[in-house]
Amino acid sequence: MDEVFKALADPTRRALLDSLNEHNGQTLSSLCASLDLTRQAVSKHLAVLEAAGLIATVRSGREKFHHLNAEPINAIADRWINRYDKQRVQALADLKIALEQPMTAPEFVYVSYIKTTPEKLWQALTEPAFTEQYWGVTLDSDWKPGSTVTFTQAGVTIEDPEQVVLEAEPGKRLSYTWHTFTPEFGKAFDFDDEWIATAAAEPRSKVTFDLEPSGDLVKLAVTHDAFPPGSVVLASVSQGWPHLLSSLKSLLETGHPLPEPA
Image 1 (spheres, helix red, strand yellow):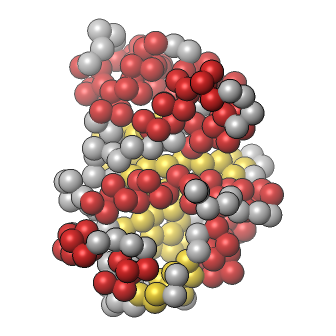
Image 2 (cartoon, helix red, strand yellow; image 1 turned 180 degrees about the horizontal axis):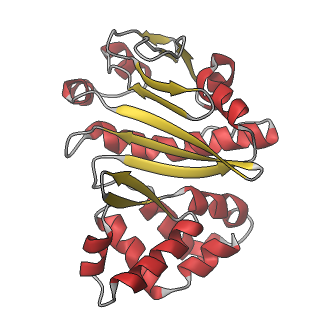
């Protein structure tokens, strides 16, 4: 947490976070355009933010895109906000909320460091006995590229030939297409018919989990992308993923998932 507080203490780094909050997924060039600093200076500030886990980077060809990462803010909130007068930490709470707002770029990126092994994390991502605990979902698949994935949640089973595994390298990388938005799913979670119809009409998105050993931790990078501009699905999953992934971390590190949010 020391690295997070030190990173947030610098006004230039806070300005970079503000810029990414307004327009997520920017390159170094676009970030430099909003600041009267050299590329080298901005790169150094971005390196501090990335080391603190406040931003995550994704490469596409020769470009490197920078994204806000809410996980360190979640960790600070979980540890400190409930211990002290909320008014004294309102600025921190406001920052947490800002980082979890729906993103303007058509993708969601989240990075977490979990005290576990790649093998156990892979189990937690693929085995129904684990996903049911922190997600309330069972995912049924043989986890081979091209195989279907069946989602079951709140008594609703969603099967679709387009819900498929895209990539699967046990302990390293998992990618699959997102589930279909059915009327039954909408009723189970109180989505109105108009929202379900809009979500169902969008192109199918995909989620990718990248696992990378980091000492006695595992770096988990989650990218949910392939959304159209203005996606209602992106707005929804951007609110859900931070709590879900924090619950996954809690389950693996303590044996208990987080309680459902009130």
